[in-house]
Image (cartoon, helix red, strand yellow):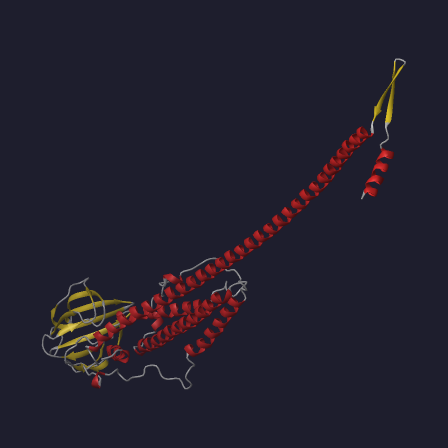
Amino acid sequence: MSRRSGRMKRVFSRLFKERQIYHRSDGVVHFISMSAQTQIAFAVVALGALLWVAYASVNVVFKEQIIVAKERERLVMQTNLSKRLNEAKAAYDDIAYLNFTYKRQFDETMDDIWARHRVLTNMVDRKSSINQKLDLQAEGLSAAGGPNGQKPVNGNRVMIDVAPGEATPRQSRVSILRKEAADEARLRRERSQENGNAGESIESMEEAAADLFSEQVLLMATVEEKTSRKIEELRQVINSTGIDPDAIITPAKISNITLAQGGPFIEPGTAASYPTRYYRHANRAAAAVDELEALQAALKHLPLSSPLTVTRRMTSGFGVRRDPINGKHASHHGVDFAASWASPVTATAAGTVKFAGTRAGFGRVVEIDHGNGFVTRYAHMNRIKVRRGQTVELHDQVGELGNSGRSTGPHVHYEVHYKKRPLNPRRFIEAGRYVFES
């Protein structure tokens, strides 16, 4: 240890020998003597300053690197945060789009369902209203029965087929449309599956809507089929009177307000944009209901009843007969019904009284204008119960059976004229029994 310390002293003694610093000024030389201790002190101060400069330089360099590293880390965190925010925003946008898609498709589906429901309800209500009117006519005509007052046994429907059956029955439209409805439902399901983001809930809703659509199509087809059958039946009834139905049916206006639509025709691009089969069926069914309504209105003013609802007997038919007074052959433009004195004579259809008074040969007579060219005449009455211009309905009393005018006994002479041409009233009375219940 002493040896090492002695060596250190020798090293310091060599490095820090006593030195003089000479300085000459104005010819005078001065010197400063620096001892070893002073040199060591200056060396320590210089070394400390050097170390401080080195430390400061290193600290500045590393601090800058630390700041750069922290800034880089901050930027990375900010980038990651922005990325996550963008991902969250994209997810939110996707959810918002899905919600919008769900709502839009739900609203479209519900609007479609309600639109079809309104059309169907409108159609069923109209058909029901027409049926009620026909039922009222049936009840009115059932009171009169046949020409001689005969009524079906047990009160059943008159078993007369005015529309002969076809050799090969036609396939029901309902059975045909059942397949069409299934095809349409399949197309709607395929369309819902093409929506991609629609999800299972929308697909399930579309499937339920498709099933409901099928049921609505079938119900609409049923309405159309029943209406068409009734139209055919009523046309046959009118034909049986010898009158062309088209000649007395007023062309139907568009009465189905739900189906009143318009706009330019634009070729569809997708299955969702074109009118479905349902509305084509609805338009066809609406046309059928319109025609049935026109037929019902025509039948209301068609004289299909007997002028007497009490017990009576037809004493003279239509056509050429032997005149009951002079015995000569003569044309008889009506039919005669005998019954009890003062029996009520009633209107055979709705109409307006055209004449109420006395005519030569007819005695006390009433004439009723039923529209569409039909006029009925009730003659030989004992008393008239209506006046000119009065509106009457089926079986409203117009007078009392009597024996006025050129008559051989109490009876009512009844005529039916179409466009001023006399027709056989019996055909009309029989026609009234073909479709209406007794």
